[in-house]
Length: 116
Image 1 (cartoon, rainbow, N blue to C red):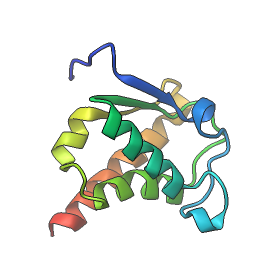
Image 2 (image 1 turned 180 degrees about the vertical axis):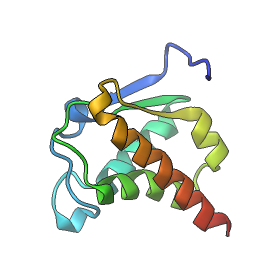
Image 3 (image 1 turned 90 degrees about the horizontal axis):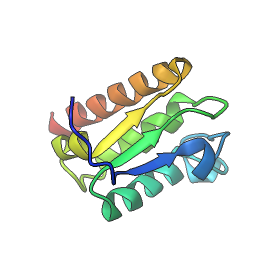
């Protein structure tokens, strides 16, 4: 388990972005995974460590999560190893744990496709 600085930026999606995340792309409507990926880029550009809290939304489509987190890997702004150290995605309520697992899978899948 990594030790995190207490000064890490905590970003609650439901409170700061939307409690009803949308689809993959901005052209498909508001609160898209693409739009949230831009939020993540901004957060990671300004903060050494970022914690993203998944709880509180009505749920997530896999396309939203894949574009936001897998898309972050595809941007190639940070090596995957660095993202692993700087970005933490948490589900405080276990009903959101499935989404956190999906995020991990999408990041790993995107990294695998980028390296191979």
